[in-house]
Length: 161
Image (cartoon, rainbow, N blue to C red):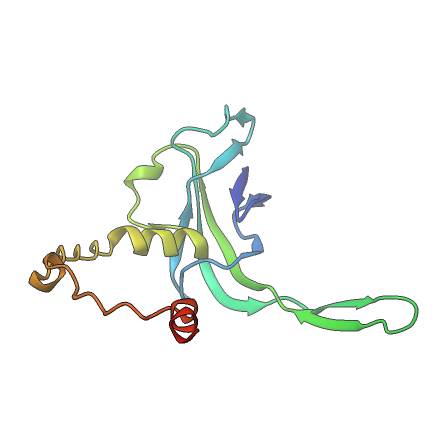
């Protein structure tokens, strides 16, 4: 039996025994993960998801994809060029089981992407304490002492004449 699952913004058609390369998941090698966003199982099509369906998999390894080189060159005089490389982080999985029903009963942790895992950790963290209100200073209530006014140059000039 096959299933279509959704993870990391992509959809995969899987069967038991398949090996997948998916966007990095928050799991170590040897961990068992479960995907609950199942779009289709066999001939059952979800609207949008199939209720109670799941795909269980075992994490084989955390790997990196091949390097992708991007090169930008601007034409003409005084132009510039830039070369950058990127290697996407991936998780290698082996699908162990496709469940049509009873997905909630299994004791396997749900597969979370790195962004979702970061959001889950942030939600569990305690809220920071609020700062205490600043006390008004006693000095601020009193008006500042006035400085003596400076004599204007024009007044000084008229006195001399």
